[in-house]
Image (cartoon, rainbow, N blue to C red; front, side, top):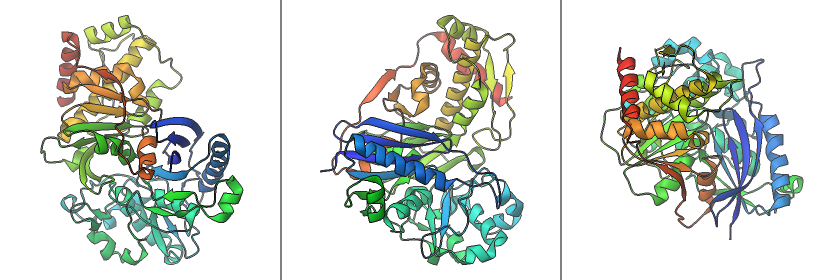
Length: 454
């Protein structure tokens, strides 16, 4: 029986290995490290060897605390790996914030499929994985020609753990241009570029790819039969527990470097690719209307070096004077990609008032995302923002629907661990926030919405 699952969770800002107890659906141990790209030749890329050392050391440590019964994997999207026949990288794993793919934007736009086929909006820098691969093939033809397989990022780590090459739909369907969510097959781009023969077999997220390699078992002390599951994209890991236990309609907001909103059973709306809406593919293989903005990055930039403390008086002052932060701190993506952030009615804000206004801004951006995808029913917030009551209260005010919070410190780990479970356990929710009854909250929402329409 599998009880303790080690979840390898590679986020854009931090990498984590969490030990999840499937009987209680709780994290019982967590190790974390910063995840910073290497900014030297041939282009900015992920330091996979440093991450690998962290992963193995974490598995060794956690197994010493509680016996690890299985390993699951989840990572950020817009990332893939090109490996040769022996599983070695032929090119470094490109950092999607590198602007190299923009150098060939016109050429790529001529071959990429339309939004109607893939549910993928055209995104800047390397946020479309297809654009990365297109650029790598043109810029590094000799290295690219040595590739034997294209792997999504979770499955790259699965390959290193098991020696088995695979791909999986949640990462393939994450604004890559590579996947058609309506046919559950590769898009026309893959065939147009001759990449289909490079694509490792697509397997369900909960497939056991195999046991951990013997050398890694000796290195970490894990049992040689410890199974490794195929893995999935991190926002879809956050969504999975709710897919298994909640009745639609509902929405899930996965927060980290990106704030990703996903609507299940919501209102039928026409998605607007110009506002960073897209179609994700969930762990059951179904299309999910989604929208996102770089909220975690914005929060870090806006609060850097500032205290994150506030009082009720601070909140009342911000609401009364309608001190507004307007989008976008990180331009180029999100529901207002072409706007530049500005403050209104914000003269002389103290640190607590500023923190409240920032929290309200992030909630109102999230509410906008939910509106764009037809979000309905209760909203569950996963990840760091779940711990911010100001964010949750303003999100409830802006949507007019209750907001529940996840009790886990990393919203992705429970979902990824559930890949190893054959049962369906209802995931407990944390505090539930109802829409506030005080008029000041609704008036603030209206003021912000009117300001962004100007």
